[in-house]
Image 1 (cartoon, rainbow, N blue to C red):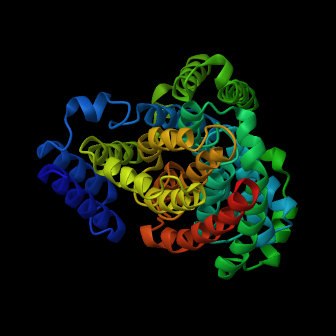
Image 2: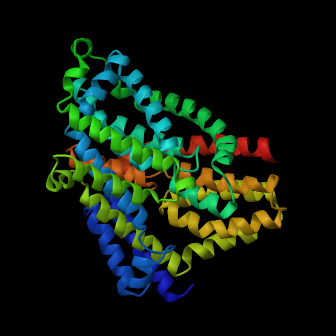
Image 3: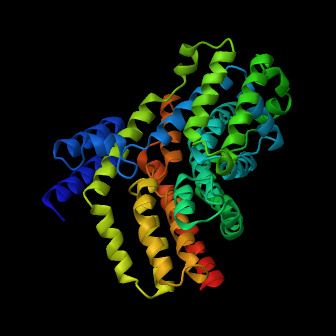
Length: 429
């Protein structure tokens, strides 16, 4: 590698260490790292701001912005209070039942939407219900972020890397359902069991709080019924457009921005009120992170790692699948899985072709998808949903540290990837 590439690696590791240790605010660390990358010419304005493979993923940024505006309007209707009371009553106030219910809802929603949209919708409900039951909110938010990443793995639209894989591999929505959804159901059951162990200290049942919840009427929480119906109508159209992306060919970011614009224009909500709920620090953090990772792509660092892995596995399909699964999980824990998958997909396409194309060789696509999507659970910056959840927690004065998330994420990732390995081996190899 060139000297500039080594400087880029050093800058990335330094920024990542600052984010992990929280010595400085994570936004400052990300922007500082991005600035160093531009300063040493590891990337440039063209690559950082306009490149599809090594620049800021504006689709992610504007998807987040649009959905944050829609969620901000929804919060004014009281619907999240309604859902919080409904969920708590269904769980009868028992904390573990509540967490299991929220995990299942999050995972199912993430399979139909993208996982970022799902956590934006479910997080406000979580804060309210935990406040009502006097429960620590961090375990519930962490579990939901991980559930969104697991559930999103099941479908083409659930996680952005899956869209890249489908495009490169010529895979359909039904391909993902047939090949990955059965495994994801198993992983969700295992994950709920893991949560019972990992977060056991948070499951303190308060009979008085539970009785208070059971006495509430959730319908009384709705503050503005007209705005609620307007907001829900826009949200349903937006979600339908997400699901129909293969037919409509509108990017999710475009759909989210159009939905936000229509909602603000058609209701009495002012632009100032709608934009007040936007997590601006989270958006800026994403931008800095994309520039840093893009610099590693631009200088060829990630490409060199990928090519070395590909050459080491040539002609050995089983070994290639297992290496791809575990290496993808490890790398996706450190760098965002979107640029990683964008870099790896051409190499995987070549490997699939070299091993006969369709048939058993398709296992390489599923290994890449599982490794990248499940590996995102390992650290607080491994997936977009994780970063969004941490941003929401900080905004609501319930901050979750990098290591608080990561110490649970490493266990969940290790278990889910370990279960995925024999699934791939037995079904395809």
